[in-house]
Length: 401
Image (cartoon, rainbow, N blue to C red; front, side, top):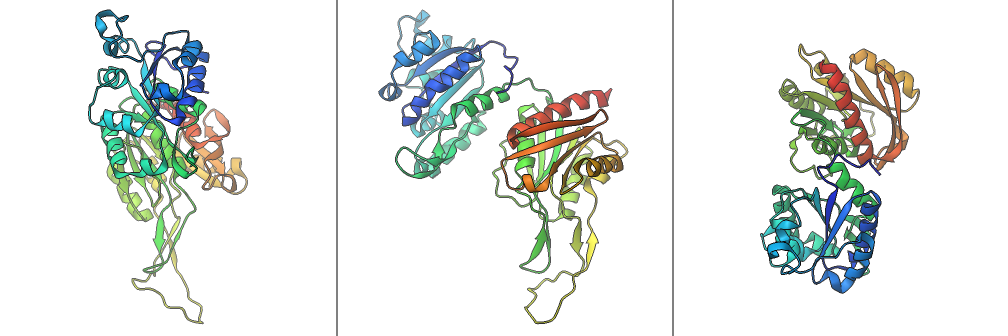
């Protein structure tokens, strides 16, 4: 778990709505309390059908609030008084019904009224049947909430209480708290413009075939998300992936290395930091065909020429941004990584061994900078991305002096 963030207070409001995942709220509460956070639980009437307020009261040592008209609260303004000293509100689970109410500004119970009257970050952890999750109405409501600044955590994919399998499981308690606290960390790169490349590039052989590098784009997208968490303005230049981009990034979709090079050139001069995560094809075909090459019994010859060195170009600008490179190696990791860093003359290079990371959610990384190497033991890519961004912020401050 990450260290406790530097919160303005240590007060967290945990909202619980009606759904079978409500039982997981007890574990969320336990973890928050264990981290020395003051937790106030607020439950909807439906939530009380799934888990008793007494359980949450025992875990927090505080009376669970359920009624908008609670006479024990000064001026009967529970929805206002309860949120004014809160660092964040976390609704877990957030049912499809509650998400719809939030998206449309309804405030007909204590929890929805409190969320509407808040002056602190709001996190929701959706939990529902997979068909309810995929329903266009739910997706519209989630998009509205994202535009309104609500932070959506999860859901996960897996088996559900109804017996179906798919998206809609509430993110497990430990991961949920970890994600929320990560968002609440100090904004180390507030208002800095970070330009990031991600994913593979694709070089056409003919109208239906091509060559590419094996890359899911997961690491690059995780770095983009971590940069957003750190308060940065992010431009993400992405090759072909199936990943949904983080909300609030400026996304530029490209296919070939040349297209990626052009996009980076157009934005590099305004960037404070450039992080080159993409697995860019080193070569393109000079004799590619506009039509499909028909199968024959004869050999064919393909002629390759080198693609532009995107990272090398940016690093050599008259006034370059702080540059971070990535190196995917199959052997001699340290030697090859240091050679690349010295050749590019960049302050930081992130290296990994290819067989262990492609299409995986986890990886082990080694960071190389002027002070030596720094091992990041195997962990989820989203966590590694946060470590990278934190390291970048430290080096960037020194680099700017």
